[in-house]
Image (cartoon, rainbow, N blue to C red; front, side, top):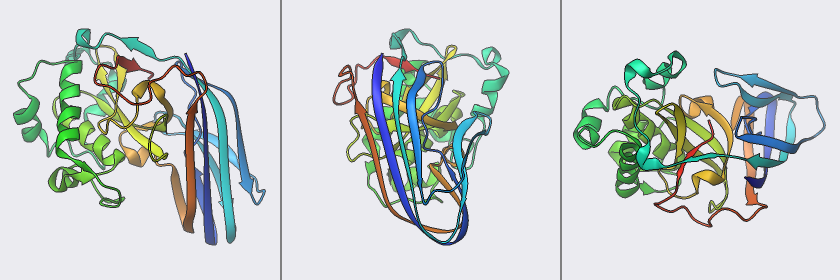
Length: 279
């Protein structure tokens, strides 16, 4: 068990009446509980906290008039991940997959697994199926991609990332998801707060469905998976964006923090981390 304190603050200049959906609140799951949390909006205006999408992501919804606007979030989160022996984790056959898992084999907006099937089979098709094969996908991405901020944007897909060989956390996750799906391994995007991430920011992980569990992976190797506080889950980042803006608003500044209160986690991820399931 670990206690993680998370916070975020987003400040905007709103240039016309604008609707916002903010996906920044810690999720409530069987392996993650929120002990206390608070939202603060300036100026004080009504807002709604609701669940949307197939994974019931918890979002804050509100409408803001013209002028400066700030949203602040704070929470203390209790993590109880399930830790498994990774060499023993096998892939499930297609016939064994539950029906609700099947959509995570399909191509999506940023994850064109159909276009990457030949490449995935050439690089990873002969490897032993299981946790080790997903790890090999992460190893390849970590080796051949450069983490460079500002080289991608909201239009960048997994195929773009593979061609240009640069990106940020969401791009690493999108490419890993695409390659896993091309290998008939269900995979999905996870946004979260990450302990030990430098510089602090919202972080993009992914999950692969192996055996009968979802297991967390981070192809960037920038944060330990068992120190991740889940925010949102979806087919790709389009389902778990930290902010959706309908109107005219410009982000002025953003701060994100994630601090462990129990001192149980390593400072940096390592290659011999256990398999972590929090789905």
